[in-house]
Amino acid sequence: MIKFCLRIVVLAQFLLLPAFVMGQEAGASVDTADRQTVVVNTVTRPPFSMEEDGAETGFTIDLLRALADRLNWDLEIHRQDSFAAMLYGVPGGQADVAGANISITAVREETMDFSQPIFESGLSIMVSNEDLRQPSLLRALFSWDLAAAIGLAFLMLFCGGMLMWVFERKAQPYFDRPLKDAWFPSFWWALNLVVNGGFEERVPRSAFGRVFAVLLVLSSLFIVSVFVAKITAVMTVDAITGSVQGVNDLYGKRVGTVEASTAAGFLDRREIDFIAYPGLDQLIEAFEDGDVRVVVFDAPILDHYIRAGGHTTGHIVGNRFMTEYYGLAFGQGSSLVEPTNRALLAMQEDGSYDQLYRKWFGARR
Image (cartoon, rainbow, N blue to C red; front, side, top):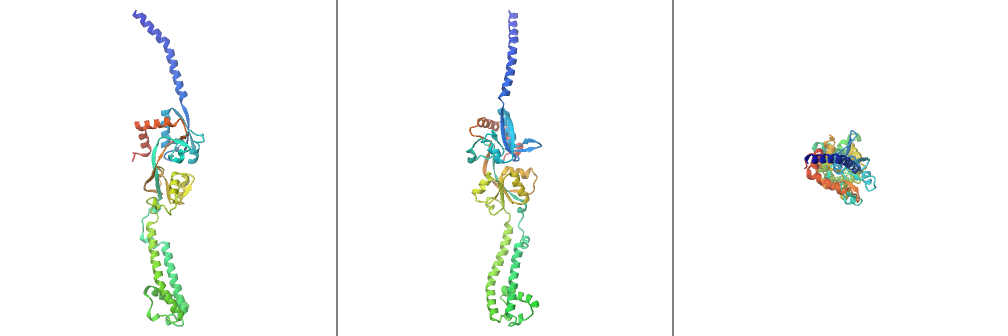
């Protein structure tokens, strides 16, 4: 009886084994068939998306690859030349998803759907290191503005003295000298008239000379006041030149940003004049060339430019402002949004998101 049962078991295994093997192969083919090709639009925005040694890399690219592993995607990455081209490809149907440093905004939500936030960001201000100089009294005293003010004052005194020589050379012995010998005594007379009120023994004697002298004395108070105010203004301006510490200091500065960015929208709302560049590369080039002295743009991108790029031309000032959140952009009604959100939440719960964040940005603040 036992032998009979063993024979039945062996026979059953022999009959069922091929069916089991065929089932495994069928399952493998189903898994392969279930993989979905997802077309991704991106743009160069270090450290979120960039190309290094011919390979696609960056925080957002790594995040998309992690999502692809969880959702059984095959990514097909298309790097676009501009931020606008990256975005327009999604509602236009050329791409399934766009990913880089895309801020989630109400305007963009009108034409596309967004994932859960993948990064908390904000705006920062970067200024040229040349504008971080400390105020200097010596530099103010030797500034061109102050030199121009002193030169103008001397010219006015010289002209006033020479006019007095014309009026008084035949009436006042002090002015009775030839032109080649009269220019300095005349200038000296006008200088003393403005500073000390004149000389009692050198009172003008001609009618025109007396009228002109009275006018010169009365106007001397105004001249001295303007001169002192000009010196004070020059020294004050030198002390505050380039001292950008926050948004309120941007007025009147040469500010640059990327056109159609959230930074451009912010500057527009604050009525701050700025120069808009078509892309980040053009903005950075203008900053390094000195065409703009201040850059307002996404904080993590400016941080990466200074820290990882080893550049010494710029410095971040003040605190981040206008908090914003980056997300992945999909076409409206895309079936990819819901599984993407579930996968993102799972990554945050199991710590894989934090691990990816530390790789690119260090510990969270």
